[in-house]
Image 1: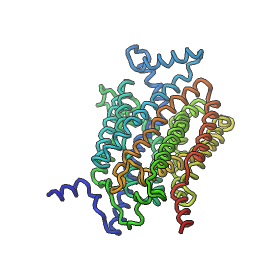
Image 2 (image 1 turned 120 degrees about the vertical axis):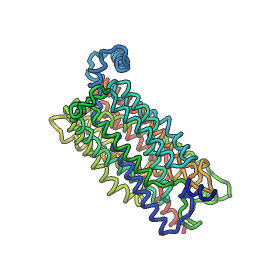
Image 3 (image 1 turned 90 degrees about the vertical axis):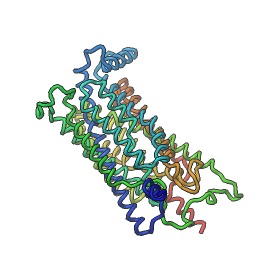
Image 4 (image 1 turned 45 degrees about the horizontal axis):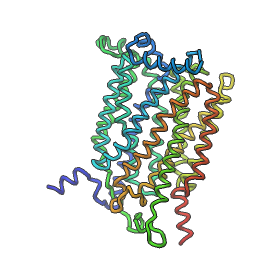
Length: 489
């Protein structure tokens, strides 16, 4: 009975024959990818709606002195007045930055907790619990006639969102260090496809007025943006059911490999036989810092993109969706045709640096040249950001995952990856802190100094992060390790 119970709770802890193991890995990776794609689809539906969504709440709650919206708007206006700026035209930009920062800051708090829980109770259980939180979040958005309810939906969503983090942990559980970049690229491809399809769907469903099509809903606290919220909720329900049916547990998965191919403490010792963990810790800390800085600058400017196109080009919901869709398609192509294929050849660090250079180029072009009389530059700059989306985070995550499983004190020797969820959770947490602070700071600079200066500053700062990666992190992932092995043989 005890053996049966253990097998039910953690079916992946048994070493499988090579053929069945390969089939298990393939099916599980496919399940993780599809579920993550659906999750990101639901998440990105709201992106092109933010500017007009805030305008909607300004009309609904803007004159109610007791509302949360009124209080937050008053704080924004007081801050603007303290800077001596009279124009209120960009208030919505800073307001939007605050909402974007809120979600990511809550992820910064919850990511290490979710990771540690997954190490203790398993990836599958924790992921399914997080899906319940996502469903509640979307349900609140459907009925968010007031701004306060909408904010609560973002709070619950930020605290419980765990699909991306669990997907990274599960892929790391299933892959070897040599195949990890290829596996983690699936996360980037899911993001790219989600950002391609989700925003246009959000813009499309905005045209459907639920009260017009379903008069029976009269009296419920819904609004003109409840249609995309309802569609997102349906996606979350479908995703949860699919995960319950198809997803196995991956924590403790043991690959059928020889002892020589497994990383051990012995392999991590110096020539005199003394364990040397400090370089690994230092590398992990530097990667965390670089991850934070990159996402601080990149996500901040990424969040202002819809405001830039709204201000300079007067983009509609449909135009915003097409613009974000273009970035998503380009990013998916980069992930599939370049990052997945060449990470093992040129090295993860090289690809990450290339992506940061593309980011600097794209931001500079958007800030200096993308205007209505030269609209082509808008798409050139967007292409640069698409290359960034398809390269940097995937390769940085791969580098961090190597540190989590090759001798770090936080990972147990006899069961490599026992604390992987927590280690990767911390890595994601610092990245989310960057995402939480970035939009607020970027929107403030955009608001005070204008789009051109904001994008120029960000371009130079991302270039500095690329230099820090080159100078501060030794090695180049698995590609360099293979070359070093050949030299010693």
